[in-house]
Amino acid sequence: MNYTLSKGFTMVAGGLLLGLSAPAAEQAGSFVVVKIQDMERKATYECMSGDDFKTLEKTLQLEDRYFHEAVQQAAKQWRDDEANKGIPFMGGRLSPRRIVGSPERFSSQEKADKQLNVYLDRDQKKGSGHAKSATNTNKSKDQADKDKDREASISRAEELVKARLDELVAAKLGTAPAAPAAPAAPAAGGAPAAPGGAPAAPGAKPAAAAKDAVKKAL
Picture 1 (cartoon, one colour):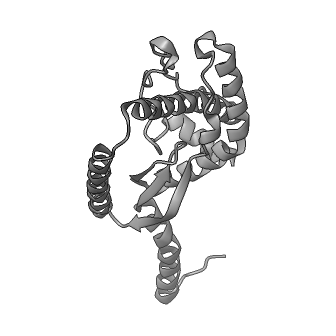
Picture 2 (spheres, rainbow, N blue to C red; picture 1 turned 30 degrees about the vertical axis):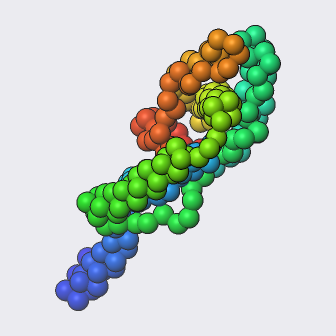
């Protein structure tokens, strides 16, 4: 039996389809500016697509789930390394990466980048002010050296924890973690040197395969 659809019905059906697809299209074309706190509790702003933001959220959930285990593994690795003898492991100063505040959504990357630059310029001015204040303090050279060594130890601990955390998350996702940078050896005299390689920027976009695996994991 053949049915003839009226013009009015066709228009209504088309309107319903458009109504259902509009939010999906808007979401797919959205861009997000988000503030992310790293393991050392230092916050930076990132701009990413809506899809990448969803992947980031799921990745952070997995990192939070396995963070304590990663710290334990990193602490053991630290203690087993003779080069770290007498140097305390600073893993207790670290915390899981997290999103700070509410993300801001924009309809275009141009608008998102514009807002991102506002935040980056503001943070740069704040950083310059803090650096100037630190320079004008009466801190002794001995205390300044101790603070520098402590910050270096925290950064080295972060590298180890991040490497173990990447492995644990990758095992959950069934993907291979990125090769971590080798931790810097302590400087002569027992003082730890600066990190051998800068850690990946917070919220850095994962590889396409890793992204797909994250989406399927949760």
